Figure 1 (cartoon, helix red, strand yellow):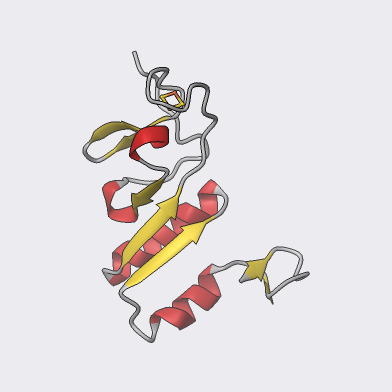
Figure 2 (cartoon, protein in one colour):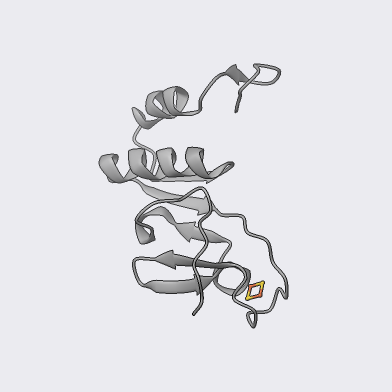
Length: 105
Ligand code: FES
């Protein structure tokens, strides 16, 4: 665990400790947190050819797949986080943008 202010765990970004942990060749990495951190984890895992699983967050208006308010774009097309996520394989994403949102039109 890392925190920006060092109040819990390691002070600073998770990327340094993750790089150290990757020396033990994990088979998978699971991450939740802000979009920028998720994108850094995704990128690092892709480079190391390690599977990553990212818990994406989105406002959810309906929660059952009808409003597309939680839609995000993946390599395979648009998916709805409420019914298809919210945890996605990192290698299914081109990146995690700060908004992560797409226009359903
Ligand atoms: S919250 Fe409406 S489709 Fe996901």
